[in-house]
Image (cartoon, rainbow, N blue to C red; front, side, top):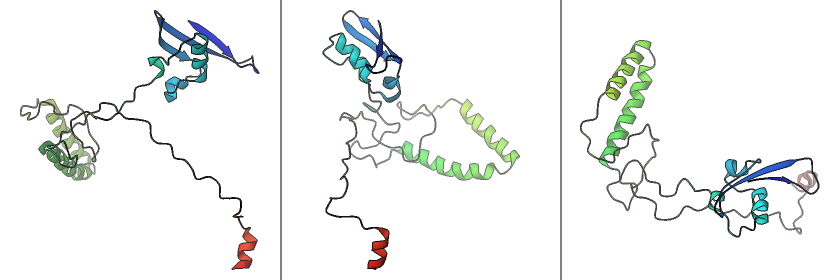
Amino acid sequence: MGFDLASQGNNARFLHVTCTFEGSFVVNARCSCRMLECEAIPCAHIFTVLRSLHVDTIPACCVMDRWTMQVTSAFPTERVTSTHVWSEQMYRFRGLRNKGNHALFKAFMSAKETKRVMEFFDDILDEDVKDIENTEATSFGPLPAYFSGANVASTSRVLNPKKIISKGAPPTNKRLRRFHESLRRD
């Protein structure tokens, strides 16, 4: 079901809001301003249509899921209580990464060495991994050096960050001196 909205002062600009219903429930809501898709915040246009349809609660389609909920890390730690205790797999990965950085830096200097290293990597990637110690081993690409954590879903909900309240302007009884006054005083 589509709705065209215009502001009271400017009837020349229209916004189109489309709502999809499944029975009496709003399944999807889209606005041509695309604020919901870009910023994950429903716009006032969608709320205007929902108010005119007498919808009392915010539909689930207008509440975006945060991607960090129930996230798990790639490398499990040996203890769940500390994220700074690395597993043996992570130690091996870090050692390979550190040596690989130095070796790749030397190899890219010549075309012959670059080709040799690329063939070596291709051979490794073509082989099947036979000696898998962990069934939950990572199956995806490179990770940043600081990547760590427990292989446990987060127990707390991820909420929006706290808003920082500024202290505002200085009090009115403290007058800012002009540049010339500060020179004469010193």
